[in-house]
Length: 253
Image (cartoon, rainbow, N blue to C red):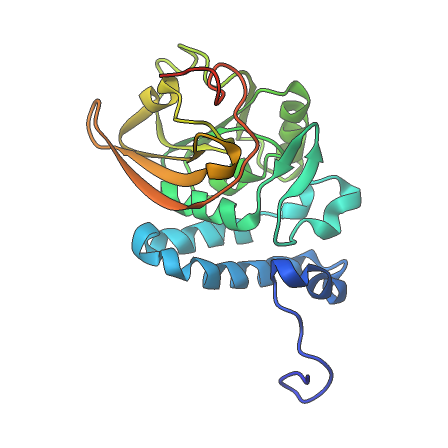
């Protein structure tokens, strides 16, 4: 196969089946990797345009284009940061697949609002949200990840992101604070009530929900009135399980 200039093979696409072939000619060039990732995500998310909105998708991709993903992984794994897949960040946690980050960011559709990021992990999702929101609070139940994420965010020039070490589902944690958008990067049977209560009327929450890990779906929940919520199914997803009081088998109503 020849490339568009008639010489050599065409470059491999950014795809789960061609990860090694895509990465090899781009080793050591995170800017090129990021450009390719954004271009591929734009094509992938086109089918979700009617649900997410074209402007929200472009906002999400623009935010991701402004965040050096390689700064949010171990330096030895920096060349793998842009691969189409999750990245292990240690302590039984991962950095989400870039496509999921893009979809969740577009689904909350926050411009200038106040965001809550549940499950800080590496800090990457919080960094992406910080490109769009007036303020971002990110909460992490594992102390080591909270400390590392805080350091990574500061190193990336995003020290304005507030990182809290806590169980995000603990009763009363967020009162009297409220948020225009909430992203939950961990799977549960349903959204813990304390997080629904923290959502303003008109706000949006995005989370992977399902009775088991194998049955999760990424959903968007909009608070349309005090106790009224509208749910939109987005796509299949698999995340690490939510821990703490709101975990899947806790019997949360």
